[in-house]
Image (cartoon, rainbow, N blue to C red):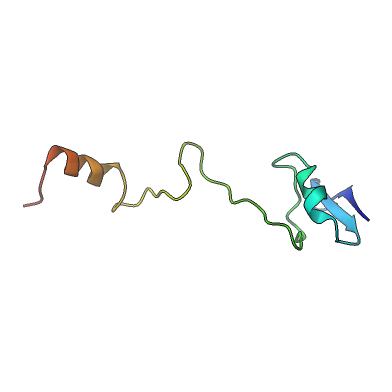
Amino acid sequence: MCFRQDCKQCGKYTWGGCGKHLDTLYASIDKGKHCMCRSWPGVVIPQHTTAGQPSGTSNSTTTGIIPYLILQLGVQNK
């Protein structure tokens, strides 16, 4: 059986036990309180996106707001 315990390095929650119940244990811990000093084998850890930026988008110069405005306003490079 797996159980939650405090990480001695970062103070967040890590796990102990057999490692066969980590999905359930990981889901029971509040977001942002998971220790990442040790791996969580078998757990799919969600990727975090920047606030206000939907996943799959980029702020690069080729896909950011400036190229969008140039296209919308019809401004061309000379």
